[in-house]
Length: 320
Ligand SMILES: NC(=O)c1ccc[n+]([C@@H]2O[C@H](COP(=O)([O-])OP(=O)(O)OC[C@H]3O[C@@H](n4cnc5c(N)ncnc54)[C@H](O)[C@@H]3O)[C@@H](O)[C@H]2O)c1
Image 1 (cartoon, rainbow, N blue to C red):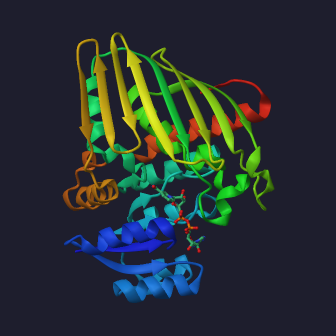
Image 2 (tube, helix red, strand yellow):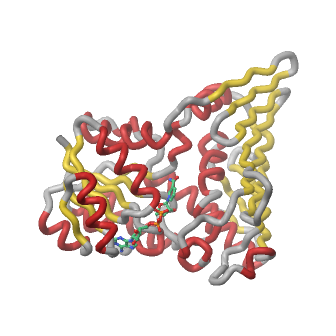
Image 3 (cartoon, rainbow, N blue to C red):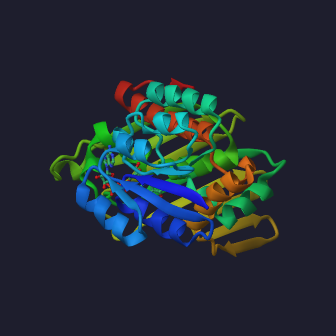
């Protein structure tokens, strides 16, 4: 039985707690949140020990794995402290809001040798795997992504200094899919604005973004994003090459259009479940290949989103 701990017990932790509690070879041993009520509630629900101080949790518990679900501005040295005790880590995306801090974390995690998975859950969709297979050996010329979503609930999200903004926190999933399918990005140029949402108290994160990217392969890409109120939600990714187009609509549909045929696939994947089980099974079997999003790859994605912020602020392109 893997002894599993959780730190940060908000919205996303609830997803993971539900999945881990049903995994036959895992026991939720300890949960921690700076809000005592959150810790006590989760502890009662899952029969775990409750903590409000992560250092005390580490002193008192013998964990095999830890889910780090505190927001990115509050990660402090949680990952380093756990890794130095040999605790395998699941770290939510984004890894942080500052590249230098995250690079230092990466070094400690690498040296510790623990298994690390990150929260880029969409990589586990069956349609993404199908798209990836289809694209093997094909030259990609252009990639377009968009995400027209809404303001995420927690108050920290609208504060640019805490969340990093919509690109860093939310559209990171779309950019991660772009990079998973089309490779690394070498140049980023962005414009962002805070338009309609500036009247919402505490909002400093831009609500509209337009980002141009150049991939290492030479392909050209664009991302459009906003969280201004809209009648509906839209998220899609389009990859184009010589006489083909791969489109992923939302998280449900993959369409491959060729000159003479169009094929569509519907996804049935419970991606959080696939992701969490891959992490736990990787620990049980020592097979790291089950994990589709390593810390290093998540760093690449973070770097692109932070570069977009920088470019929007300076008006200059950022070369990675
Ligand atoms: N992969 C995904 O699809 C996905 C979805 C939502 C959120 N997330 C990410 O998960 C993280 C958390 O998001 P959320 O929506 O759960 O936020 P949230 O605000 O709902 O919950 C965060 C929790 O962490 C607690 N917390 C804050 N600082 C802490 C500390 N130092 N020690 C212990 N607990 C602390 C808060 O009290 C709160 O209960 C963010 O990084 C977010 O980007 C990922």
